[in-house]
Length: 444
Image (cartoon, rainbow, N blue to C red):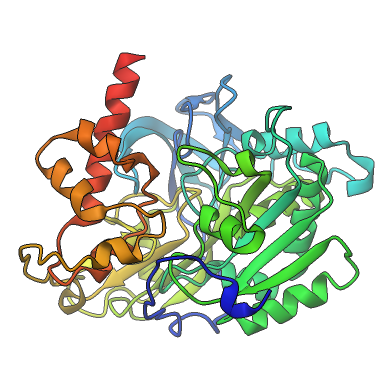
């Protein structure tokens, strides 16, 4: 297949703005004096605290647990003293219970953290259990518990594991740097997933604007006959898992379906690296690489940040704001990122980036009436009709929005980006999705 064919219908060309950090090495962030670790930072059931105020905890110790299958345990990222368990806002917009821990600065590791042995010595069931106990969730999207994704029903026959190295979201470079600096871990993590799911074909897809990452991964996988590195055309949202499946495997996930319905499982680069560390070192997911970037921050960086660290602390480590006050701060990139009203929120497992925009960059463009140009239909990678979905949502007619497959929207923002009238397309469709899901939950 030629490179020009390795893409999908729709999508947009966006300025990637990755130059601020793409060549900067990953560095450790300064240790936080206090962390606020959310007990619900994943898809599924929230965890309940298994510690209380006054308890002494260690790095990697379980502090939140749930008996539900679709959930993931939460671990302490520092050693120190639990100060309180309190409800507070997190970057997703939810208000959830958080364990507030004052660090003692010693980073004393929990005794349970130890290597698990070689991959050849571990069964698929043992690998799934290791991933589950490490609290690993998807680190590039909705935070879906990894052990659930890797345990498909018996009737779903999986033949390929896809690793998403596209990182098509502008500004973000955390995954890029991991592919360049730690390609061996990425390849090992892929091998873990392949064995856990029981397949012998693995593919890592990387956009061609990351030639150093492609080179590093090819070198790391040179002796792996069942693993291939596939260069992808640069187009947004190339990193959406269903687009990735379409591009690499030529399969279309049906409306309302999941990748497993077409024989695939998709994992993010950061998630795959976390899986490698869980198996090799017994390390739970209590820290991750975060890109802090944008014209509004003085010193953009790629930092290894402990979960629970306040955004404020991280931004200060990057020199603070370029101007007196930023125009907008997003968790994530400009296309799919979540706007923040406070920098006192904590880093969660899904925080891949903190984007600081200047007031000039964030200045909203005037809203105009729809001119019926059809551009939103042309760029939608899911073949939806964004303007009609948006109109129904704004009128409160969520039944009609549902009939037009609003739930299939991946919220990539390509429609809003391309709209010359600057209509709130993805924002209103997101509202419709919430209302439709709430109605279904109420009915059930």
